[in-house]
Image 1: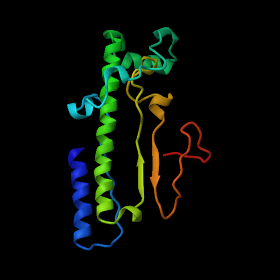
Image 2: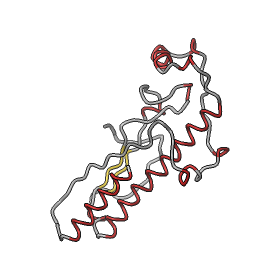
Image 3: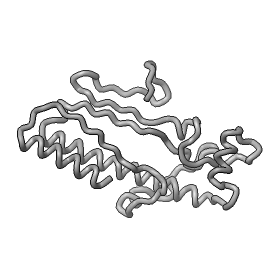
Image 4: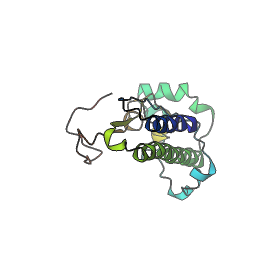
Length: 178
């Protein structure tokens, strides 16, 4: 991810230096946030363990899970080891730290666009391919259609085409899909 951001910033600056005014399209793909949920101390230390929210719906007994969740539970070998509340908090802590890390990488790219006077002339689309259950319902990773896994960000920056606005996270009046 460091190299992806570095190469993107370098290309933006090179195009500006070379007076290259052609339209461009970059597909900038980051790996984080992704398991394993680890991160360097500078991002890890942005969060206190006590500030990490625990799952709203804790692990459910196997018999209470729907058939697909039971399959995921078995596939991930969740019955072969104990997942303690501290394991859950630590994993979520790493996920939050990874989000902050990616925020910084995106910030570096936006800064390069601003520094080269391309920000207001560039359409930026930020999205993801999946979320992560992060221990909700006792589930991890993607692979389910519960909100933690299926809901993803979709952010557009297109100042010449779309007026800035905030839409409440629970309601979007238009159809939105990948």
